[in-house]
Length: 414
Image (cartoon, rainbow, N blue to C red; front, side, top):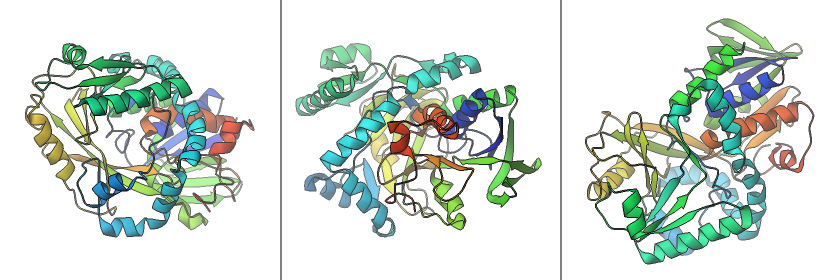
């Protein structure tokens, strides 16, 4: 048994801490905020076992032009931010070529397909089954062309990766989600994904489980990490913490921590927003509305509207444009009610150019381990990559661990 510090108390960090505890290690979980209050709080709450393919960078000129000219609510961007992230974005674009994307998806699908199985025992142990619904979610389609395209994609996912789904026509969808006033062409129901009514609370409950199993959960400054003898130290509110090994699970802040240690991590920061509404006519399942670039998800705090991606500078002011667009569109179709919060939540998603998280030993340091870069799927994959990181620390080898390992991924980390 060894002492291990896990930096970052989001879903990836708590999933890693629990996996390491299961192998008998003594774990201290450290973050600057209480668990589950950063990126793991602000998502649509879907454990996406259906997401066999990572989100590819669009390569067709028509879609790119829509993004560049601001005619899509799925992606908003600032020219200055795009220029600053030009290197990572170019790598992202190159890795989205069909052949390369297909190869990456074979590894990615191995992660997402086990996500609900990895969450399940933790949900039970934390006593949070009341937050979980094992009933999937909908992707709504407004016209027959969109429904045909999405059904073709779903059939491909079913054939290639055994992802189950249902295709609903307009009448069937209206029966299952009667709160919508509009008549849609239909919807795709991804049946095996799970949904969570409070992602932040679930993450916190996992951290409470870490403490209940003998670990420490403390507030501390990850940037104070320094090598000390045969291990590492970090300053925390509980004093100096020393451990033989340290795992970096800081999501979008990981490159900043690793830079003084000599690592350059290429990362695309994607900003996202959400806002809760009082929702007089609640939904039964989350609904993805790709046309309007939003997700509507029933939560304990109200009906959550989550946006697509915004490529902006990290310190850019809050911009409600995507939420405003989505709200304007959805008020014609459902009784949203009033906003619950005065200000929307804003956070960032850590997207790497090759779309796979970095999971394994840091290339040039002993006892320094990485588990970050999950893009849109940190909430989904935290327990899964946590278990894989624990495997790597135990000396296990597999093709999947090799694909995720930082060594050999010079286009992502140097």
